[in-house]
Image (cartoon, rainbow, N blue to C red; front, side):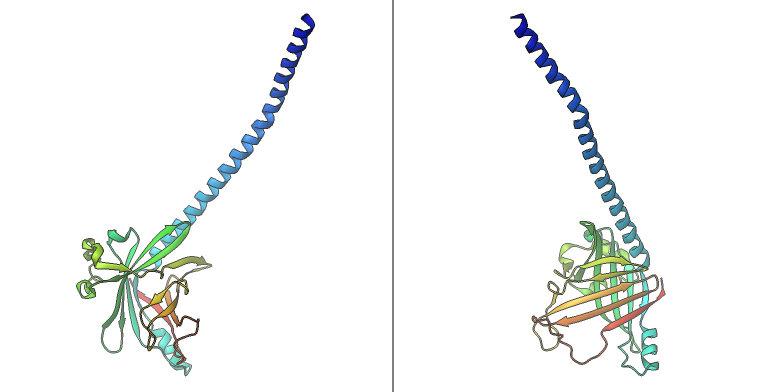
Length: 242
């Protein structure tokens, strides 16, 4: 009986000793797991901070008045076909219905008069680590004709006043000293373009501290360009004032 108890005691002590020796190993594994989790969290936080800083820079560069007069002069001097003359106004908007980073955009022809040819709202937000711009069309553009001079008009904006241009979100990325925004051609469609009943649109924008370039290309369902005239589609706007 004594021998049996002694063997049992030694066995239990051996189990405890093996457990004590294993604990440091388990501790090291736990520390490693926590270290990896901390590193991942730190990397995610750092990436979020970087994207927030990039969005803040877009908000700083984008607002203002633009025209493409310099592009016209360069084209004429080189003997190339000059695009039409346009002006562009981009103003921060108080359209809280659409978010905290919203801009009112007004495009006008500049052919001796000021004829508004387009008005829209663009909202920016961070989605899954990317800067996404959503385009909104105004239901009754005439109601907001003074918005460029009075952005506070949009504080009264209600859901029926706008509708989203679905599939035409722009994904923005920073490349060196500029930002680029682009749509997905396979998702962005427009109701009509020339004789076609519908087309796919690939929009690409480039933003620097003093320029905004916009290029819209239209394709049919087979990926064939719809505009075969060879006319320039890129519009290079130069910042002319705040």
